[in-house]
Length: 404
Image (cartoon, rainbow, N blue to C red):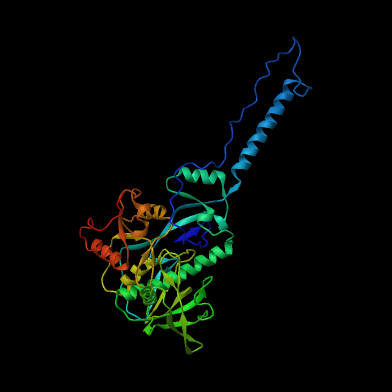
């Protein structure tokens, strides 16, 4: 999860790239020289006129003006905006606790159980990009600060992204992560619920153009009921590019079309349809977390829901933190700002941190003292790690991100 200064939501679905390893030439300037002594002397009984033409006073005044001008220029250059984004550790939020007087996770329609301990989601502050400007001095100072990371803005935000677009994308990512968290928690607990896949849009040069329309609900592929995205993926992989029969629900009626999938350039065959899940849950889960956006709290939301609707205490009173996107089937995905999130977790008192396996390259060798980082690929592994720690058992054998 990410926030910008001032607390506005900020998109955090960013490439997992390391910060600069070498200084970036943000700008340079020479030392400022102060006014010197002219070396002149006054005649006996005479005096120095500070304002006489060609006198010492005029030279001193000129040099002072030049020095102040140079200083002003240096300050002006230092405050010029540069195309960089700064990430720094943000606050943590206990998914088992409250935010602004309201439970972060509120369940209605099912029995709930009080939970001690902490399952913290972690955040980063994002300065720069469409949400604000970063100066040369800010960027250089952040580069020198081991707790922060500096990235070219185009690696974080697509060119031309506006502030409004960034905030909207962040809010949508947060909403999606919350729905996925509920679905993954129910899957983990073997609680049935309804789910369908709907066509949200078509990609450019889509294989499904003119056949599948935005708003269609995908019902079956080659006669197999589409209960999850994996059903489509498995059928396309097995067909190796052969045409497939897809039945969709359109305006309440079934429509069957034949689509010849295209190779995506990486050896995978796709329909060229961007999909979204439509869920029907057996009880209501409301997640309240103001001024935080992005998809990376999904894993910790899932664990918080599990702890809330099951008897006992998952953490055993321990302080656990973590991060990672979550899919409805429980897969944990990589996120941005992992280094800053580990620092924020340790500062808040966490001793165990759950990190996506996809972030291991950035984790190894950068773990704060006193923090055990456990590598997880799915919700089941994360739940096992927390239960092991919560029961007081030895966690040293849990998978870690090893240095190469």
